[in-house]
Length: 280
Image (tube, rainbow, N blue to C red):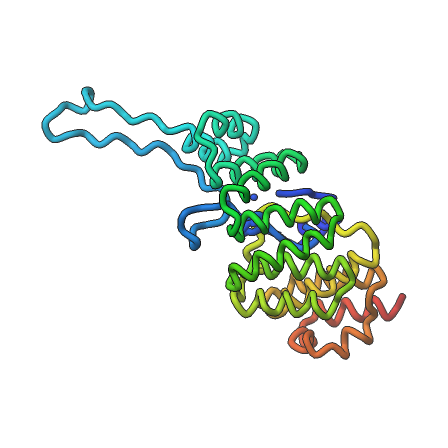
């Protein structure tokens, strides 16, 4: 819910669960993305449970053995149950592919261990230098460590390879707003929305760390409100506007003059918000 997002914005999260591609989204709602063979696969770690044994037609079920999961499959399952340390231990028993290094990086990031996460993402890129999902994940590490310039360059490098990722564009927008590049940040958000109108709704996934200053948070909340309006999330837009007002980034008159919020003007909650602010 939007009320819970407020506390997430005000808490310094290194990472959430996309992404995510999700991902996921925090100073924004940006996410890591898991690496997979198929680009369209859900970017979050998907637990892979061992398949139930199928009884052979010529043998009683009791004589059919179940194939045990591989270490990587076991790690995926443990990730799905948020047992990240155990998942890492399982992954360490598997062949070190680019995909596996990326999964280990996500596990470390979800354990708030950015140094190990960065090491894993770099190892993944050494094996697969043109994987935009891993680049996105590495960029979220740079963001969390306030290396905003390095993060921006990595996001842009990922977009050159995959110009159809709404999540990466959204992450780039969040990064640019943190650098007070407001026009470019909003342009990146618009690009994300043009690819996936629901990108602000699909807020699962690890999240970038919250902006450090009140001014940055105010800007972030204001442009998140714009993005939410375009995604049809009016209640969330109003909540973000309230935070932007409380942080002094904008005022009721500027909000009323912003055509992006024209669709909110008839809503009682929006009218009440502006009335309350004008009385202060």
